[in-house]
Amino acid sequence: MVLHAERDEDIAFAASILQRGGLVAVPTETVYGLAADARNADAVKQIFRAKGRPSNHPLIVHIGTAAVLEEWAVDVPPLAYELAAAFWPGPLTLLLHKAPAVPPEVTAGRDTIGLRMPAHPVLLRLLRETGIGVAAPSANPYKRLSPTSAGQVLSGLDGRIDAVLDGGDCQVGLESTILDLTGPELQILRSGPITASQIARVAGRPVSTPEQHDVVVPGNVAVHYQPRTPLYVGDREQVLAARGAHGDRVAAVLMGSVPGFPESATVICMPQRKPAYAQALYRTLHGLDALGLQAIWLERPPATEEWGDVHDRLSRAASPL
Image (tube, rainbow, N blue to C red; front, side):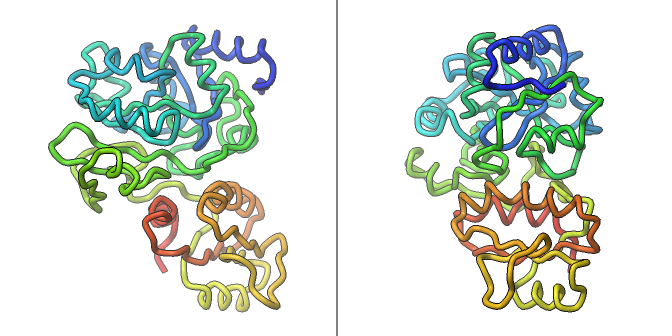
């Protein structure tokens, strides 16, 4: 069932589904999330069944205001509120010590919980009007491409969920940054749109992004975010060579235009500014994945901090060369 975010009655119906223990795919600024009432353990279990996601993989809880942080977490440091004031609503998830009343299904039995306030106005309205928090991983089959439109949700989960609330295309397009506030050091456990430098300016101290860590968080398995079509990431020469060798059986996803190499259904010239590139990435891969190609070859983006989340997603989605 498709509900429309511009209709008050559809938002109210989505809320009623959640309140009675159902599943609704909801829009956020990052990707569409598969939402269930995070206080309802049985509803949360349905998320894992619908996605085919292992139950030992924790979920992020989305809340409507920072004022309810201490309903979900304990020993909340003052820095959490400073970061919330700076970046919420927005794509920053704070990892905190969970409150005792949080169902273990949400946190996969761990003593920590990821919390964020999403920036999509429709989801924020739903959260604030109902007063609930929703557990909401990406609304896709486990390890597949995250959806940034209602149509992409339906292509993966139609028949497994109660409804999708269509709020248009996601404006950020990549999953949130996850920041660990439970230890003595500030660590980014999943790269996202909010960078270590941005967080450090608010925190007044360094923020690290370790390649390996002992904390299990959403989206941090080695193989993830994958199209069905094999995806390879290389430099421009490798991409053009693969395209030249295989023609239309291989898609080329390039950074900007290439003289003498016109765009087509299988030659995509991506935006060169990072925010626009990130917003387009999953949409582009979904579109190419539907074409039944031999492979997708993607030109490696710039290696700067701003592009860290793009590189993280591509490293998990791509096949080895």
